Length: 167
Image (cartoon, rainbow, N blue to C red):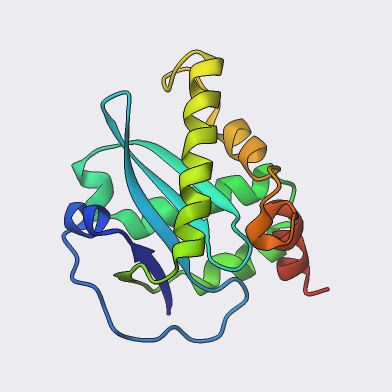
């Protein structure tokens, strides 16, 4: 069982009451997620707590929020595959997120990094011509190559590779 720590806006959209259960120790651990409105579309920005690896999930509709655990898993799979992770490693990561629970956010450092990421993604979406025509896998690829002081001036993708490979 793993957690996605959601902002109040996202918890309301998901129709979920936050859990107080503590997550078990796992490969990547929990994530923080925020509901964004970009070009009048509901989107979610999910950031891994330990690596700041981020997945931007655009243009969500009501049914997507009702099955958000599946949407999250699908987007995580697609992004890890796009990054070139071996199938075996992707499956190990996805196995941890079979049972997702939702909790309240608990880390301002991560939320601050997510605000920085939001500014970056809004700029890049505009630069690429808008939400409708932006390649989301490439956008996520670009976002995860930004250096963050919160992770000692490293790239999120570097930390993710270390965590997943176990070295």
